[in-house]
Image (cartoon, rainbow, N blue to C red; front, side, top):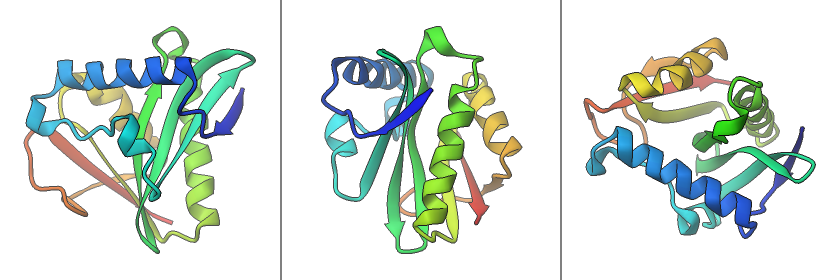
Length: 151
């Protein structure tokens, strides 16, 4: 597995991000979908990575800088065909390493509260993320779960 920076113009990445947005829309009401679209991922405060096995896209993830000491995990997605192979864990480790290089003191995320998001919540908990209240511009939402980790 190789993790590459960028690749937002690659057709496989675009397709995976569309799948990600569709999946979020299927599991959450529109007002509770906080996933970034392609334009959102191209913003200067967001860095994006994709995981590959040669020419096969495995997954993706991004970091959004909230301030000089606080980052947010965005757009974590494993391609359906590659689930249960450690892709999400590898991407999360990469994002944690990048957050450390940036000297963030905290890394946070928002995910869904529904059953379909349980694998994501379990992964983040295994890596030391704790449940917390809303951060940045988020508000309390019964469809959202907020997690954070001190670095």
